[in-house]
Length: 324
Image (cartoon, rainbow, N blue to C red; front, side, top):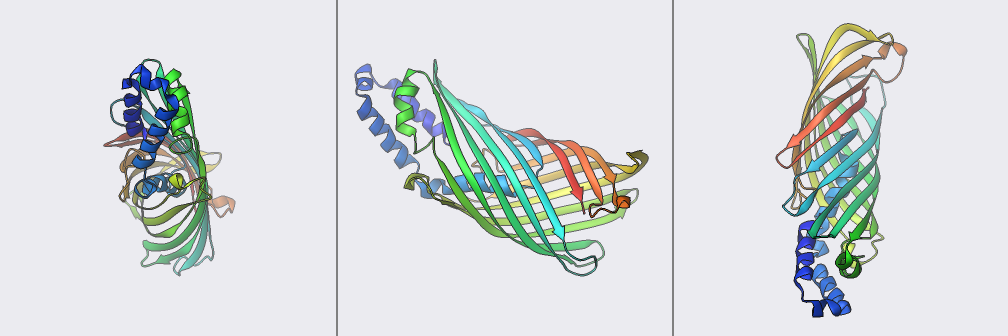
């Protein structure tokens, strides 16, 4: 998130003459002042907000993202897991029905840079979060429904850095600790979404088109100091097209269908590329097991895999879900 600028600070340290390095306390204070001036929380708040919001808002069960970054910076790795659940009240599918949904998520972002022989800094951001949302499924026709949703959530954000090399350990670690790296904070998020759900049979396929436009505010609570006290706004648009092709096969006495998935996510806002990318596509395939005959509230279980790709990111993910 900050690595390219920190790499520039590190390069300045490497270029300092040996006599200047000897005055390590003065150099540490100078670098710390530069870091504070460079990372105004007003400017970078949306970047932290994007990280927290991404961890508790994306409709992805399990995914690994590998953003492409600038030269000199080790490409980061973003690993994301979430467990969503939803309860819909009422059985009349032709009338508006209220629902509650929750989401528990965990995410890590690992990155770093090597700025001189034997000198490097590796950083890991870890986020735990959960959210609770409520809304209505409002059918507008036989095939099309809209879903207005209000949500609130809570997340924790923690950073830990590892320094290698005498300059990194003696100069950068004390200069950057608590300002750029090695701090933790909590955050609250709240906002609204407008989703839509279109489903119909088309030939031998069941087609589902799902989408949502979300807008969330995120702000820190209990920040250790003013330099990591952040707030921001994040908006995103998600679109997913799912095709389900019934087959004559079964698994564990449950009818089996072949599933194809294609999706697109776009993030908006001043720091929309805070994670190294602001949009990505998904394409995958899997199986769908029809368990409706078992009398559960869940109609089907879905398993598969998908590829993630975009202008500045690639990766892969698992399709683990259910349909009510």
